[in-house]
Length: 366
Image (cartoon, rainbow, N blue to C red; front, top):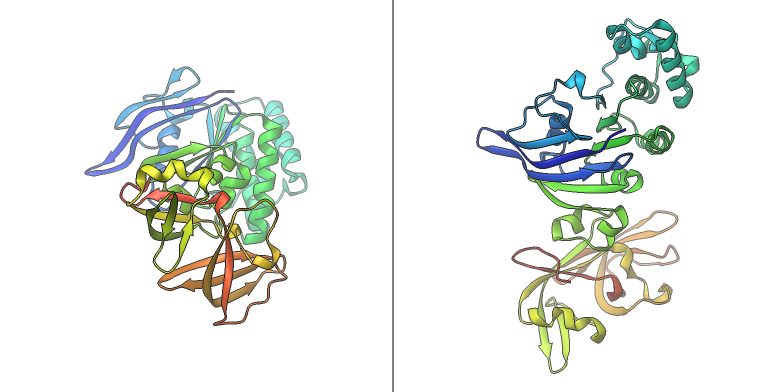
């Protein structure tokens, strides 16, 4: 088993910096997820670790060994791609065993490893089949099994669930989480899907435009985002943002968004007083906006009048799309709520979980 360390790693393609000063230490047996929008550098970072791209600057370590100049086959890693990349003319068994045969491993050891991996993944009945006889989910398990048999120090997974339908994605991500616990190996997983990141990771590294924005546990990223980008990327539906200004009036401090004004609770105002008079972005998650008739206990409610544009009944909750003047936002309210289109309603914003960001730097004010 091994840790992984990126030490001030850069990757340049001409004038484009795909990975910009990446500095991460992944603990042994950790499940780290690299997440971000397309083009943010997450897959490039994984390919640098795998040796499929050359580092422009910096060092990558697997354990105590610098691997910058080590061939991919000698890095003791195994990679699972979005594409299953199975040999169509080979059986499942032969697909999983192929890499071990190339290494001239003993047949008995190959059989042991393949059968063990097949047992873990529940694909033993499929070992004699060809890839064309498998479903998408079964092919993905075979691709994961081909990585498992190598018994590597580090597993690298590059968007392995993207080709699966929604139901199968939910099932397979649970299987991968279970697999990580069983194998007790370091996993580094790349995805653009923040739901995958939140449900699977020990820690999440959020990237944007080649830069690491924040690395933390899923809950801390959700509760305490460092900046507006992380706040908007983590959480589904995304956090609502309102252009506003902090206004001091006597001893009170207000978030003035034009169409509505909210007083910041006095026990929280001290943090924001130095920013009084400045333009800010007020952020609040849809799940922190409530129907006043069904507010949970222990919240700090602030009433905002809005007009209902669209409602989406989800069974266990209702998504309500609203406008307050020029501001559009979404609330995630109790399923007992009954709203009519174009109705003027009041919503309760829970200020216990509000976020305020500097408008210029987009950094969180704490």
